[in-house]
Length: 347
Image (cartoon, rainbow, N blue to C red; front, side, top):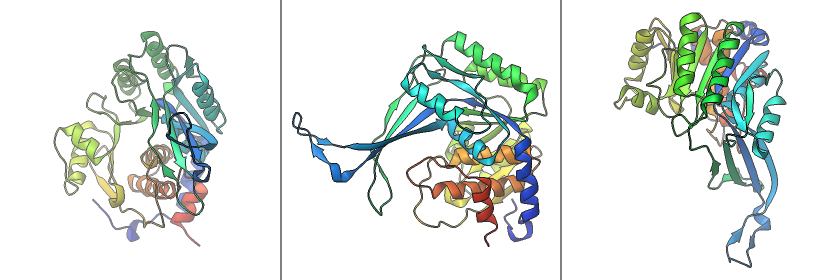
């Protein structure tokens, strides 16, 4: 894989040309949307409960934002994508109201295929943060709310029908499987069959899938994963050294893109022909928080490729975007076109 950045550096004019096309794109995000609820704690207001004798954390601010597949939507919106179509669900509850409001407030987001249902609870990550002056936020133990039973078939059918309905009207689909237990979220066996059917009917449609559990049962679409997920996919441990060759072989076998994030060692990808590229991670510029970096990479890869970027250009853009995001502390951040530009082309 080619790692010579100096000979293949993107020019400012090419950057402008590609990112300008983002304003013409329509991208669907199919997956598990959750609410990231941040509970900001002031350590100076610490108390002890009179009833239990346990420490009391006083929350002085609560903020909510879309997480899970919603993090991808946040990043697409930050890039200025023209239309973003979330296909997923939330519970008909307070958290669902917050999640729906957070998504609907983003520019370009169309909510017609997002379902509020009394049959599910809203997937929620409650994240207590200790906020101290001149110190990075400190996250305490998280409180999660999830669904542990299979997604009702009526809801599965509704979501699958939404994918079929919009498939010929969009430029790309991102599939994001975030749940811990199979069949409890959006990316069920039924949804995967639908994605497979869409792939066969519209072979030119760009589809990129990411799963925190397992990609082995996914149809032959583009894959984005980290090295541990690649190892699970292939059923054996994959070393850093052999990852480029393995990714290239997988891309060639499936006839689709294959991307692998390598944390502080950068990002690599291979095209449908098996030809691969690799970019090195950009230097760390202070304290970092890696939460959301992988989803930022996914959003930037799909937007760049849909806009006509080469494999290497897509990797460069996604790598720079991730570098922006990891330096945003105490939040699941995004990277705008302006922020990516300033990192790639500093004055």
